[in-house]
Image (cartoon, rainbow, N blue to C red; front, side):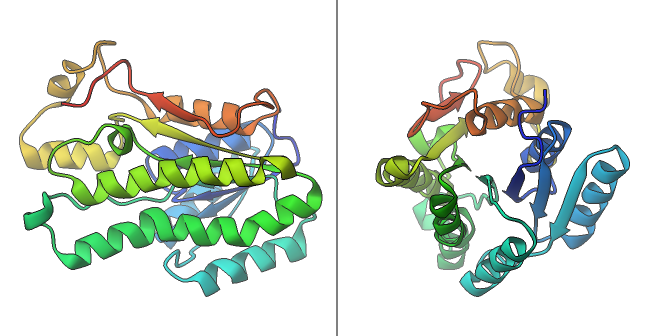
Length: 251
């Protein structure tokens, strides 16, 4: 498929886990991928690998806590390209703990990355999408933002805010033909999850046993759903929160 041939796609948090799978998926489908990540070394290596495989990718280490840095990146991109077709707000962090176990810094950093960065990215990109007659925005929320898991109040609340932000943005800018949707994954096998398993003493089999489908998700499966939501195959999908959980209920 070449659903994104010659389209410009921005992906935040693009260098690892779900983000890497999203970058590779869009590049395989013909997009010019713009990888934004705080880890410059990993982002550069991913872009180099995509380009060596025949795709097109560029990277930049952008401080997503800085509205000025975000605005500067978008301005530079627009100086080089005529359009911004797709924005994937995927960057996120998870600071664990119930309310009394969580520091104020943990709370503030969670909202800075998971929500404020999304706000500033959309503020920078939306005017260009409106001026060109439309575009697609897909946000990475979480199953836990809709059905909170215990001991993750900062993450859960920030992802609930991402879901609400998505619905509001979709309602406000659907008349401008900017489609806004979100994916809400359950557990996904990423390096972050695997490191957390090692620390907790649980195994991947333990997590798989909790899922009616028999296993947790793979990054490529989330990337496929994101690509569909951003594509012309979903022209009437706007304001959707797509849960991708293997029928797992949060315990």
